[in-house]
Amino acid sequence: MIRVGLTGNIASGKSTVAAVWERAGVPVLSADELSRRAVALGGPAEAEVREVFGEQAFRAGGALDRDRMRALVFRDPEVRKRLENLLHPHIRALRETWLAAKHEEGAPLVVNEVPLLFEVGMEEEFDVIVVVDASEVERVKRLETARRIPSKEAQRILAVQGDAGEKKERADHVILNGGTVEELEDSALALLHTLLAECQGEGTE
Image (cartoon, rainbow, N blue to C red; front, side, top):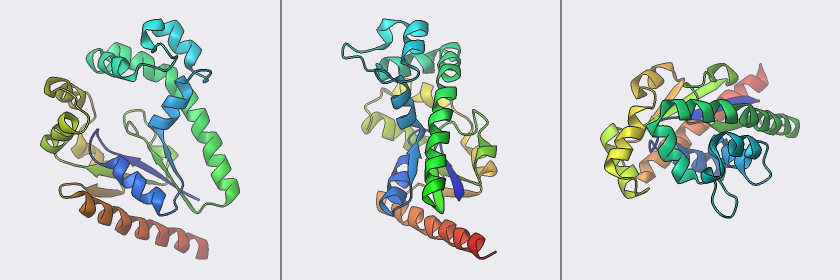
């Protein structure tokens, strides 16, 4: 089973690529989804988050206030580090359970979408790393329009993420997202065909 790590800075288009691959029948797991499961009501990290960050980190219904926490972590590196250190062991355990299940099912290729793959040192956990990249100007524009994040906050978010150029150098494959959604989807499918061909090649060795 080939384990693909899919990453890229915020608003680069990696979630679109993940969705294309999932529609094509590839098992895809999102780190953001694992994070939501970890801090959900009754989740493995809920009690720890409440203890460290207090009740103000949660909405009235019990769900984590993700907008509030996002604003906090991108303003304060220490808060971000505390949250990452708290969540990552739980996220890793959930991921390993999922990978074991997919291996048991006989999946030839699985994809993990991990926004902070390089930042948290997860390169060795994957057989292939794919980076999706778009220009900083385009990413800021997407944050402002699609996600309605104010310009200053968008710039702050981009400033704390790893260098996109370095990530591309360290990747096995790079998908450039500088055009339309349709062009990005075509690029995603083309790379998927390449990866599946590599799976078939492994199977014949």
